[in-house]
Amino acid sequence: MNSENKKQALIVEQVPSLNDGIEKALRILAAEHGIDIYTCRQKILGGGLAHFGSGPLGKVKPIAALLEQQNLKTWIIQPSRPLFGPQRLRSLEITDDEIIFTTPKDAVSMTRNAQVIAVLADISGSVVDKQLKRMMVQNVYQGTADNARLNEQETRRAILMGQPVLDLYRVSDKEVSTIVRVLPGKFDPAGLGEQATLSARGNIGVLLKVCEEYFPDFTLHTGYGLSQLPGCHLKKEADGSDWQIENLKQVIRFGWLMTDLALQPQPHKKTPAAPEGASPGTVAAATLLGRPELATTGALNEMPGIGEVIDEIDQSIAEKSGEKEQEEKIDRSLPMPPEPTGRRLPLRAILLNVAAFALIGSFIAFSSGHRLPGQILQYGFRLGLFQAAGAVLLFWVGFSFFLLKRHIENTPTSKIRSLAMGMVEIHGYARRKYALVAPMTSTPCVYYRLRTYRREQHGKNQGTWRLKSDTSSGHVPFYVEDQTGRVTVDPDRASVRAGTRQEGSPGQGNILLGGGSSYDSNEKWVEEVIHEGAFLYILGDARLQKQKRKSLNELKIEKLRNLKLDRAAMQKYDVDGDGQIDADEWQQARDDVEDQVLREQLATRQEAAKQEDAIVIGH
Image 1 (tube, rainbow, N blue to C red):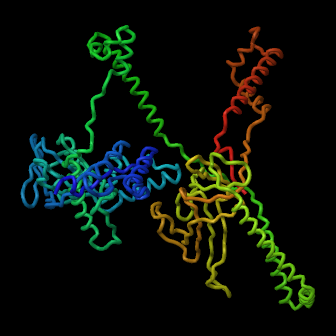
Image 2 (image 1 turned 90 degrees about the vertical axis):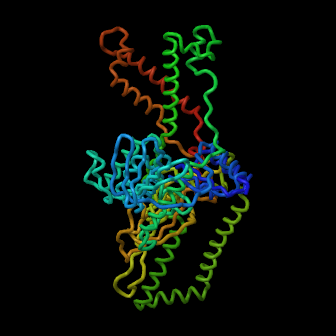
Image 3 (image 1 turned 30 degrees about the vertical axis):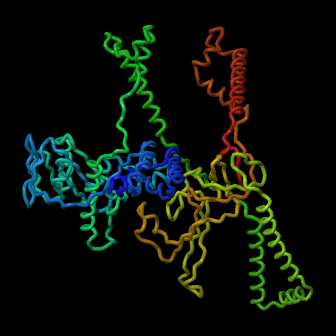
């Protein structure tokens, strides 16, 4: 079969977040190759490797090239079947030329110039739990998961604290020749010499460090459990009694896939070309010397003193570029939600309360044997007063729904960028403005409503659920965005229909955050949540947000107060140099401060506020 028609697997290294370039590439893949964007996002997001898809080389290669353009690492391989398993290490001996690993079968020699591919894995799954917990907490409280991935040292430390296993693959002639498996407490650490420790797991870490320093061509992979690769799915205790044995087998499968990544050629990857043209430092030096033609010849680097100047200029530019990249990577944390304020009851709730009290009062009056309530009811029914009241109530409810229907029909759907003031209808995706977290599930959300119920333990109502509390995040605004922009939505006093409803008990929180220990079976929580990223329909009144600004007089007083505390600034107004500020000098200071406040206020007003903060949609 032609190599172009053989089925190839596309492996991609996952990233913690998607930028605009990756999103654009996914849209191109969806249009040209019919790939589902949602599935692609799930495969690209994460902290390990993922199987992106399989197909003929002619189809897989352009997909890999497009992903490579967005700085995503990809590999195209034919997954090889594991030909043999590892040999368990019993002892080792380190010499100047080789490391001899003694196994039950024979002694395995790995010379200093050997190519070694290592897999360090945790078969208990603690690394996965820690990674997911960090990503959850990072996203919940900072609104991003960009920096949530464990770094290499943290991953190693987490693996060694679990149930670690280290597999060493010796490669000879582009093929795997031997595999040595290292298990904690199963080998004699005397061969490590003075570096040996009393900890079985610590000795694996020492051996790993020794191998890294000993073999120049050494590659380590720690992504088992974090990767989405075929045949490499981490099993847990709930999957059966032999889950650890299954994980050890899957570590072998993972290791062979890692050797495929290292040994199989990657024709779709371009070799990095040498930088073309002269460096900025060379161009600057040639310009200063008045000899621009020397910039591309390389002669300037050989001139005494000029080469050092060029290196300093290039290094300075590189440092500034690196500082800029670091600034771009800094996450802007979401602020904490505002405290709830006193809220007015809506008219509907007031009427329902009045009706409830009236019914309760009537029931009490009837049960106490009074004749007056019965006479009033008989008289009211005879004259049709109660029928009329019921008709008015039903008419009012029906008319309210009719008005809502007319509002929906007569209000066109608007783009957020071209939003007009007044009644508007928009569609978009929910985005958090504050670090709001659902109290029961501990998930990022833009809105939640939590009702707690208590089971009655005594009396006639024993076993029934009674509403204990009803809280919501209606006081916390959030953003809704579409392809044109975003706008603030205030859910206070709005009719909210959440898309997700869950029931649980206290203590049955999110397992990633340590919940699930013990809970009270006599208390029930009902949580309605609008998760971040949910697609929403919004109908409400758009208005300008009132900006809380200090008055000119308040700003002036504040600046004068600061001026009095600044002795050096006050001395500038001591014109006669007597060490005292008289009335005329103080008046000059007041005039200067007033002029400064006016200029700052004009400059602030000229800066147009962002639409997302200037306009709010509410009740």
